Structures are given as C-alpha cells and as structure tokens.
Length: 431
Image 1 (cartoon, rainbow, N blue to C red):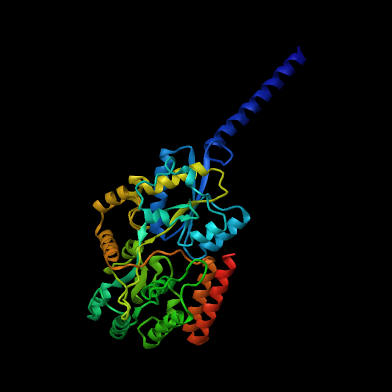
Image 2: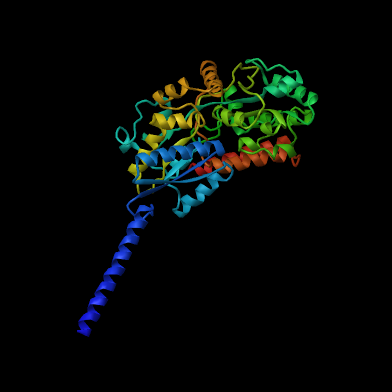
C-alpha cells in the first residue's frame, strides 16, 4: 500500500510539472518570441521624432490587422544609420525591413536586397504607382523596393526673419548671385543671424543638373573637376562675405529639424527636401515658406528634379519574404496608413492615397503640393541613382567641405583631391 501511494504521488508530481511547463510555453508563444507562433519582423528607418511617431502608429495599425505578425521598430537619426546597417548586414543580423535612400542601387549591387518580383500582383500591388517610380527601384529587370514618397529639394526660408530684416522673398527665377545678395542683407541687418547654411551634396547635384550634368553616370563620375571646384568656391566666397554661416556654426547643424540651424534661429535659409517641410514648420513658432532654389544665370535651368524620397525594401536573407512584401504593400497602399503618414516622406506614391491625403491636406501640406507642382512644370532634370559606395562618398564630401571651410587647405587642392578620391570610390564599388 505504501509503495502504491508513493507511486501515485510521484505520477501526480510529474503531471503537475508537465502541465506547468506546458502553460509557460503557451504564454511565451503569445508574447511574440521569435521561436513561437508569432512572426517577428524587424523594421529600421531614420528620421526625426515626428516621423517616428507616425511610423509607430502605422505599425500598430498593421499589427491589429495581422495579429500573427510582430513588427519590432529600430529607428535613429540619419547620422551613422548606414554605417550601422552595413555592420548588421556584414554580420548577418540586419533587420527584415529596411528604409533606403537614393543609395538603394548600392545595396542591390551588394546582393543584400530582396527581389520582390514574385510578390507583385499578389502580396504587393503596384498598379496605382507611377511607372517612373517603379523604374527607380528596378535594376537589371528586377524590382527591389517601394517608393515611400515623391519629393524635391528646395530652399526653406524663414519668412519671419525676412520680414524683420525688411528683405523681400526672392522671385521664383532668381540666380546664385541673387542668393548671395539676399543672404548678405539678412546677415548685415539681423543680429547673430546669418543668411544661409551651405547647401549639401544634394544641392551640388542640383547645381550639376543646371549645367546638364549628373553626379553619377553608369559607373563613372558624371562631371569634371572644375565643376566641383566652382561649387566649393561658391560657398567659400559666401562664407567669407558673411552671406553664409561660418564653419564653426555650420558643424552644429543636425538632421533632426528641432536641432537645425534654421529652427534654432541661426540662419534664415536652409536647403532641405520638400517632405521635411512639415517637420521643420512644426518645430518653430516662426513662419516658414518653401522656395525654388536659385537658377543658373547662363543656362536658365533650376536643376531641381522629382525624386523618390526613400525606398522601403526587404533584407535578402529574411526568413519571411512573403510577410515583408505584405507589410510593404500596407505601408504604401493602405488609405488609413497613408492618412497617418501624410507627406512626411514625400507625396504618397499610390494615386488613391495621394488623392485622399491631398483632399484633407493641412496648410503646410498644401505648401508642399504647390511646390511639387511648380517643380513638375519648371524642371526637366531626370532622377539618377546615388554613387556606389555612397557612405564613403558622404564622408569624403563632408571632409572636403570642412577642410576648405576651416582653411586647412585651398579650394583648388581640396577639389582636386575630392575628384580623384571620388573616382577611386566609384571604381572600387563598381567591380
């Protein structure tokens, strides 16, 4: 009897332990562990706080409709974003869903981007996307990513500062000479405020387009050394005249609109992309407006082009390519998601979403719509992909600008070195 009772207790104990383990396993599965029933997709992007909040809201909308999928957000500022991504890709630990810029082609060339062709017409609908935006993500007849929005570079102007200085907003057909004159008036009239922040390398691309050239042309540099020299000299002259902010101040400018020089009140004009207008406008009590950049006086061209703002694509090594394609589809084609995102990443690429967003557009969004309409009517510049080895090129460009601005070397020497090193970068990454 004692032996039988002992065996009964032992069996009951084993059953209790097994039941407890079973319950723990069920609980763990529901919590979204990667080894449970729920599919986990990591999603990385860059942007300011406003973009992150909107993106998180869209993620929540998706998860409500797809409870079997958990989207894990990984976001940061643009500074260091691609360096981190490169490290993750090299170690095989990159996110499933990745936001790229105009350098998508660079990563396609590396073989790390998921081709999406087999999902088109099923999980991924492109029927309401403009053909040129589909083409922008197509390489060697394969499609790699959805365009998140259409935008264009332009000049953000602090109208409040202009009014305070009694300086009129420039005409639409102004020139580089007009820019320097206007910027000097601001600097001279207003205390501790400079006219303009140096245009970045996207501005340089616009400068080249005004001359009928491109930064990158099918495996080689698309301009001559004298073009880059004249560009760097233009800004060195403006810094020396006081039209542009001094080098020490320019290094304080950050990608986050709230930490930018124009929002801080240090400059009255700053080159940004149209999709960023809302974020900048929301970050300051001053009145901001968006303006076409200066034209080239000789060619009469403004060099501004309609661009894909960013691309959303998949990691070639994701374990869940079908679910990645479904999320991409939701992000750009769902009306409710489009209303949440608005024009933060540019004008929606899906025609139905764009129509819905435009109909309920706030005043600041109408500014962007009007600007894109102006660019559509006035520019014949075509979209071209960024350089292969774009991250290296970015560092080289920044280093060249700072070398000149801090007077560590002459414009001639720095420009010559920039051109030579740029050719080496492209050659190295084009093999």
